[in-house]
Amino acid sequence: MKPSLPLLLLAAAAPLAAQETHTFPTANDGQSRVEITSIFSPPPPTGFVPLRIAVINSTDADQSVRIDTSSESNSGNSAISSFSINAPRRETTVTELMAPAFSPPVTSGYDHATFNVDSSAAGSTNSFHMASSGLGDLPCVAFSTALVGKNLDDINNGAVSSGPSSWRYMNRAFASSYIPLQLPSDWRGLSGIDVLVMTTDDWRDLDPARQLAVRHWIALGGQLELRFKGQAPDLNSLGLALDGGAPPEGDARRGLGSVRLTPWDGLALGSGTFRDYSAGNDRPTPERVRHASGITVTSLLETIGPRAASALPVGLILLAFGILVGPLNLFKFAGPTRRHRLFITTPLISLGASLVLLGFILARDGTGGRGRRSAVIYINPDDHSACIRQEQICRTGVLLGSSFSTSQPAAVSVGAVSAFDPSNPSVSFSNSQSDTNLRCAFNSPTELSGDWFQSRSEQVHFIKTVTATRGRIEISGTPDAPSAVSSFDFPLDSLFWRDATDQWWQAPSTVTTGTPTPLTKVPSMNLSGFTSANAVSPKGRWFLATTSDPRAGLVDTLPSIRWERNDIILCGPVP
View 1: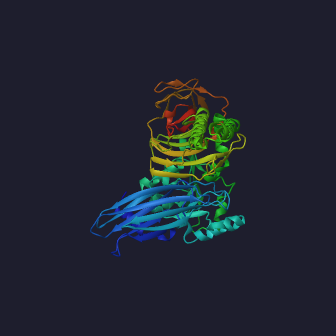
View 2: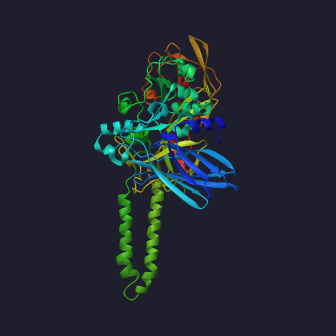
View 3: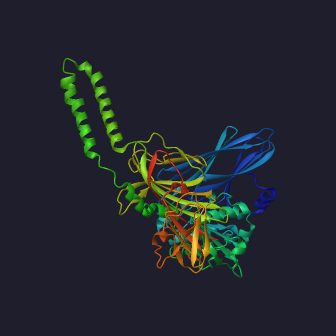
């Protein structure tokens, strides 16, 4: 993409000290170069790392620049991607790239991630690396330059010095800084941030594309914190109307995330800032912590159950192989006078044993795999979008391929179930069967390859995406006898609606497309299942629905996996 000239001039005038920029020559003329800037400095450890690439081509020939990125955890797992940028002669080309970051469970001082970049042009390659942010169980927070000034190091040092000595290992950071005008216009570039902090003036200065990206990021679970001076602003005037018209009480709910207004005295934030983001301050649990805890996969494990024991059959096969290739082979098939037969019988016996073992594995595990998916989908009728948070677990047999594509660009992370105990599952970021490292690749925004799926493993995937939808719930009738009409192109197994007086109503049966369904009052509404999925707004006109139809918006991944169960919650405001 090529930003407009006014935006580039404003960005150039901003203080670039907040961002880490690396410059490399692309020709020998002393002027042609590539400038690689990390929008967030330091970069986040999860989701995507947004990069701003400026290629200044002062030559009379077109240039091509290749950017290779890798995000690596200290255990050796990595996410990789490659990009090619064409720079016309005598032009400056500015491109926004979304580079994937691997998602290690950064919950101790010794777990860390490093982001590496290789830039290749005119036959030469230049490299640099950056240590990713992420400190203990604190959320990943990004502050605008107006708030932190030159105090980012003080803020990070204050957080590090408050924790255990391991937090000082590898020069870890609690927070990042950024220039608001250079925020990514793609929500994926914000997916590694838990809390985005800026001033109300910063927000007003963002162009519509960047504001929309932030709104989608909030709807997927992010928390936007707006610092203001003087009187608190009206969120409606900022284009951040609350879901269902609910009045603000603490955090203002939007989708699966929230907007928070915080007074600000106009001074740069200091070393004690991290305390505002510690546990007990209604801050979102970092995804790297939530994923590593195993809590989210407990219910999913019930579907696939423990893997059948295979030690005895495999032991019998190996015992038979030992008898055949040893005593029988030496004394029966290739006796003392026929030792030359060993060159024939031994390979044949080995091949036969291998085929028997392969047949046993195929008979027990089969090909492909099976699993279960769950999702929470926020439906925003204002911009006709569906914001999807999906979690899935699968057990694989023998896989003939592991590459797959998604219909929309998505943020995907993967972990292996390393300890299969339904009461206390744990998720690791290496292969649970062989302890080999995971190497996952984004070949394009929708094409993925590598170790996202591995043969004979139990793996968990966390997926987020935003897609367009025309589906919605409309309420008609009288206040005492409302009816609901669904425009979703799939049936709803259950439907609940809360009116402006906080009275809940429900559909007595399955809701089909286009058919008015009378609603009945719910004397006592049990919201525990929906609340745990973060699908209920505090107040306002709101709907909740469940379905098992994958057409609701589930992200399809590897085609050879058979999904035996889909648990989907839809939610959103009702105009």
